[in-house]
Length: 233
Image (cartoon, rainbow, N blue to C red; front, side, top):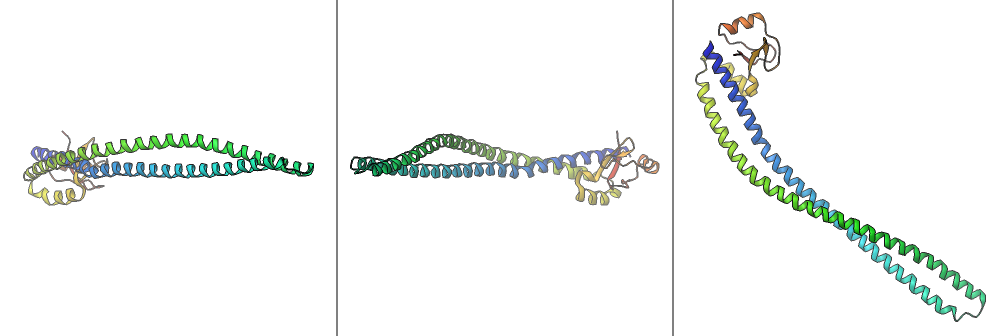
């Protein structure tokens, strides 16, 4: 009975180890995908920011062109002031000049604001460019680390699987069918240590009869989760 308990405990430990190693191996591609996604997002954000800056530059140039046209119009009107033949004509031209100058002042303010915005947006673009460099470096580092980690984990899993097969050969024949079914379906959770009269997998309390059967070396399964039970040390 003691030998069987030791075998089950050893098998449970090996299955738990394999579960952990396989989970770590499964996470490797996900880590690589995350690093690649980060780089793609950084590049997309950089391109979007570049497009925004290009639109701002174009808008600024259009405003500067409009400003130049208005200033040229003011100069033309000022030239006509000297040719006015009446006060009414003079006043009309002067009013138009005043109105255009107000527009010129507004356009100038808008252009200055756009210059300020461009400085801010350019600073953001520089930061996004740095983020691309960081993301690319992180991806390169992750690729190298994942290659090594996958190789190490694959080798370790193969080694532990050999340990598992060796340990399974020691399992009593009357356990093997149910053991194979449970561990195939649930891995380490197909086995459970009994502690404080409770199943270590689902924590359901075992009955006195189950406890007695465990003591005499019979195969006992949890009535709640069906895990094969073994006594604690």
